[in-house]
Length: 322
Image 1: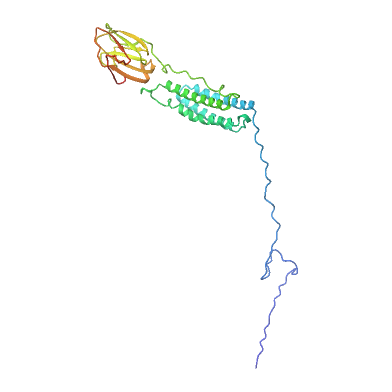
Image 2 (image 1 turned 180 degrees about the vertical axis):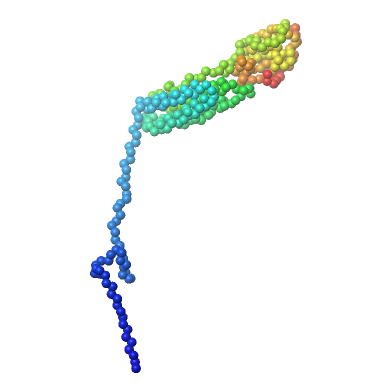
């Protein structure tokens, strides 16, 4: 007996509230369909274009002059501290402060707009300030040396003088460069450039012609006449070594002098140079040391010349320093 198979298809109906309305934004889309989600466009993020700031107005010539004069007034106390320093250490500290002040004032000048007639000159003014530091280093080279040109210890007062003179030279160079750049219509330098420092006595020092500054032992009857057609010189007569002189006499260039009271036969040594240090009886720069090769006998009036001549009858040789 054939049996019938009944297939019952069940349909489940999902009940929901408001099934006939629009889907909520969180409802799942129908199978096989697509969803389209629309939203309002985002607000524009573009900011309004700012209006550029106006360029600084160009200074008038009197205003530009005032700006340069103010720079000088600011720098003048720093320059004075350098020139009034009493020691090398105090000088170094004051010099560093001046260098900082020059840089600050240079940067302040860079902010201004020069008069129309000085537009091309103003960059040269700034270049002059920029060159100051290098000029100082160059001019302080000599002050940094601790020995003289003759190899002697350099006195502290000489080093301090050379240091001050180096800074003064560099600052005067700055002022001259600025003045050259801006021309005659504007002035710079009259307020701040210091006076040249006073040199110690040894700088350019000279002894007095004919000054017998050393004597030892009893006097004799011999005489030595000296003609000096060269540099300033010191003539030493001695029985043996120039470091134990019987007498020493200073003879200036192109002068003559006479040394009396020499005893016995003797050797003649001489040294030439510049920057005579009267305290220690020595030249400190450009030194040379020589001796006459012949020993001079007693009982004569001898005449020597410190210049080489083709008719001379005495030879000389270089010696060690004395």
